[in-house]
Length: 329
Ligand SMILES: CC(C)(COP(=O)(O)OP(=O)(O)OC[C@H]1O[C@@H](n2cnc3c(N)ncnc32)[C@H](O)[C@@H]1OP(=O)(O)O)[C@@H](O)C(=O)NCCC(=O)NCCS
Image 1: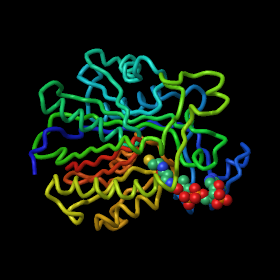
Image 2: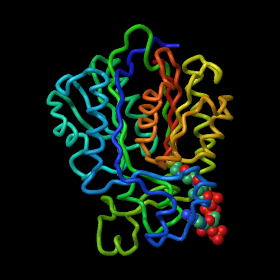
Image 3: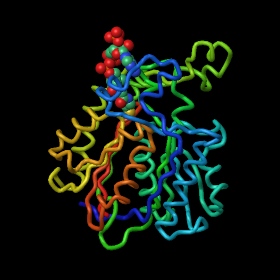
């Protein structure tokens, strides 16, 4: 096991106040039911951005709370890394908007795009910057306004996602706490199983794109499900191997919150009982890159992550991308 170089100093979350339940889909003309959604995904409700809430505003709220918890001022942040698939604008990055909003005047700021695995990719990148001496204090955020990119006419996808943000202050580690292992993988050959077909630089937004709704998320649900189970299990194995640990050493598993059945399969594969698995997919749906940092913040707040806890996090997302990390708190 390597000596940890970077440790979590504080966490925060910023989620919209508006809650949409499974029953609320009927009111917008979506033919579905609470039972269908709950049985297949475990989702009961999700938060949806309203009244001008943006990826930047949710991320900034999460970041302020994380900085408060860490006792760090905006001026002490060396780098802001935002994982998002829903930047507020295509240019510049949303990370620079967050930097301006927070007044983190010394920071370099950039976005990372790795879909639902994005926050673990961002954490691994921040750890590298701390390890190299480029940064001492990093703000690592996952923030998504998924409601802006899902197709509200496609019942097979729109019921699964939600909005929100989570943030962590990562600092040079003291006393053996911090990141014990990290793992990242991608397979671009499978990109078209979960994607937004058009509206980027190849086929810029046009009346035709809007008409076809091809700028919105499309997903081959069954295929994604199979790959998610396989890849998250692989990622969990790699994180445990990297930290020279087994499932029994893990105090809490925080998996990406996409689907209860994927979460259960991942836990079972690693020999981790469900009592040691953090679940909030019922209350948030899939918030993509925000799901793990929101869950981590709730797990700390509720006392399920304490001083000395060993926590494993595992994610899977569009790309495909998958990633994992073991952290000692
Ligand atoms: C999306 C998912 C819930 C669909 O479950 P499924 O059992 O595979 O269901 P299918 O897609 O085969 O659809 C079964 C039927 O339900 C219908 N259906 C789809 N969405 C529905 C909804 N919201 N309400 C009611 N019926 C719905 C389909 O039209 C289909 O009907 P048909 O058999 O008459 O054609 C499931 O595949 C899944 O969870 N995939 C992984 C998604 C994910 O987590 N993505 C993010 C990864 S980061």
